[in-house]
Amino acid sequence: MKLDLILRVGVKLILPFILLFAFYVHFHGDYGPGGGFQAGVISAAMVILYGLIFGVDAAKRVVPNGFVQRLIPLGVLIYVSTGIFGMLGGHRYLDYGVFSHHHPAHGHEYGIMLVESGVIITVFSTMTAIFYAFAERGRS
Amino acid sequence: METVVNSVLLTLLAIVTIAIIRQRSLFGVVILAGIYSFLMASVLIVMDAVDVAMTEASVGAGVSTIVLLATLFLTNSRENPQPRNVVLPLFVSGSVGAALIYGTFELPPFGEAQTPVHLHTAPYYLQQSIPDTGVANVVTSVLADYRGYDTLGETTVIFTAGIGVMLLLWGRRRRKDNDEGPTSS
Image 1 (cartoon, helix red, strand yellow):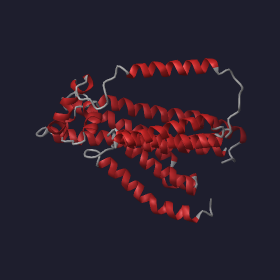
Image 2 (cartoon, one colour; image 1 turned 45 degrees about the vertical axis):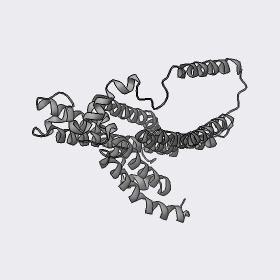
Image 3 (tube, chains in turn orange, red; image 1 turned 135 degrees about the vertical axis):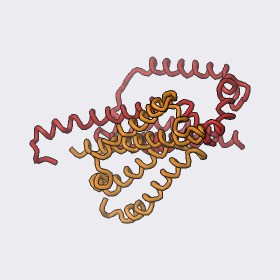
Image 4 (tube, chains in turn blue, purple; image 1 turned 30 degrees about the horizontal axis):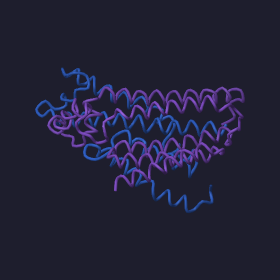
């Protein structure tokens, strides 16, 4: 693996653009195809590609395993607490009108962005954690 | 034009499927499954389901291929040829396939606007997405807003899947480490 110079340099060049594309898919989900789920998978694919070429240990230095494990429930928590926040504001569960009382449509836009953030966090960390789990298992 | 593209893609899908059945090397099967997913993503793009196509390309062709390759690394990479009776499996798959094809006779033609699915709640979503949510992509507004509960459920499913895989794969390793002592990494 150490001798694959073209792969290593090529992957290093591609990585930032994969992440940029993931964020584009996430934040542009309101207007174009994609959203939190696809963006999460694409950003996890970046970590997986890095791990495949440079080794899982290098990937774990960039995205530590413990960090990924904590992110998995964090995404679900963000999603659930967005809904509960609406309830506290006197709306129904997962009614995003609570985020902007004067202009409910804007509130819905913020709410969608929030829950999509929850989705991207959970999907990214789950995919990465599954990859780490398989890679770890193969080594022992 | 669309008919030509569709028939080329579906023919390729059929060829890949037959190749997967004939293939004995599991590495080849995994790569062919990735090709299958990518062809399926192309079919979905032709059907204007861009969001689904994106998911299929990234999950089906990308991540699941990697996970399957990692699984191969843990197991044998060749299928054990088992002589078995093919009559019953052939009968089951043949009759299920025939039932599914029979079911498609009652389906409305693809893209037909006057069908129940397009007349129930879909017009409301299409008309109200911008006034209600300010989101131009109706798929996003339906997924995250109108059907927020379902997406919450999906996120929980992913969460559960991740936790399950971690428990299954890491639990055994930890026990092994304890047997060997703390020096092993």
